[in-house]
Image 1 (cartoon, rainbow, N blue to C red):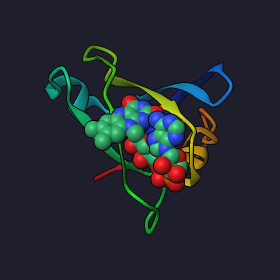
Image 2: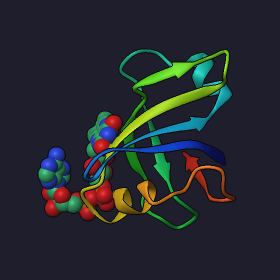
Image 3: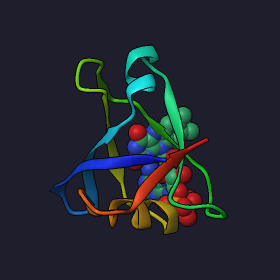
Image 4: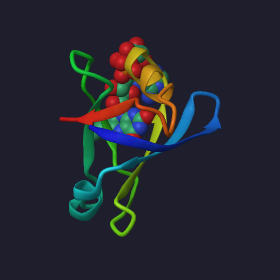
Length: 87
Ligand SMILES: Cc1cc2nc3c(=O)[nH]c(=O)nc-3n(C[C@H](O)[C@H](O)[C@H](O)COP(=O)(O)OP(=O)(O)OC[C@H]3O[C@@H](n4cnc5c(N)ncnc54)[C@H](O)[C@@H]3O)c2cc1C
């Protein structure tokens, strides 16, 4: 379970999300992606780790909302109890 730190709308259906994921932020390599699902039982989708800040313990995802899962994920508000799960 990973908290969403920020969720910025860059354009229609294009969001930049910063997620607290300290271990992934430290270990990730360029080109790697995370498998994300909004909640137990939801579809798992791959999203590229676009950037990481090991000091802050965060990763950055750019998400184009094109279907059911991506629309639900970009609707996740920062600073709430809602969380993303990587699998
Ligand atoms: C390795 C990997 C890394 C990825 N990284 C990212 C990422 O960083 N950010 C990101 O936003 N997405 C990324 N994707 C794509 C993302 O995983 C899919 O957009 C997501 O799985 C779609 O799920 P959905 O349920 O929202 O849409 P679905 O319901 O599965 O698809 C909705 C509809 O959109 C169509 N569609 C699919 N792709 C496109 C497209 N590019 N343009 C127009 N129509 C399309 C499908 O054919 C389908 O009809 C990545 C995919 C892979 C394999």
